[in-house]
Image 1: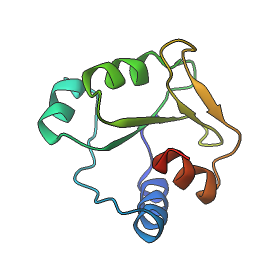
Image 2: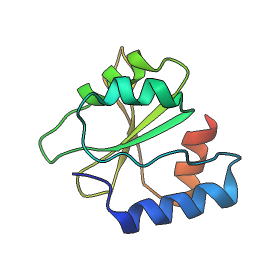
Image 3: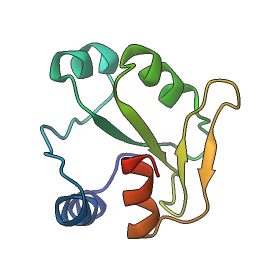
Image 4: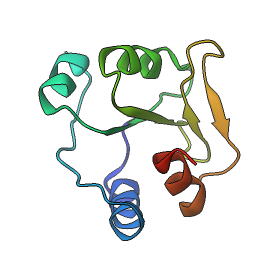
Length: 107
């Protein structure tokens, strides 16, 4: 699933209000995604997962972008995951604005 425009707008607004972060791009499609992201050098990557998709894509992006925080959103956008190599992924209990901002800040 791609992050819908509405969800992307909501996340953008929450992040803009609460965290000192600029949105540099919204990418559509995953073709050569690590390479495209490396050229942008982001601090944060949000990626939507497909229904049966695990955290492998988020882990691979974390490997390709070691300075970036990667947050993967579940296919239904009810949960978010922070990939941790040893544990495959860490679940955020909810996807509330507060939990998202704490995850971005590393709290």
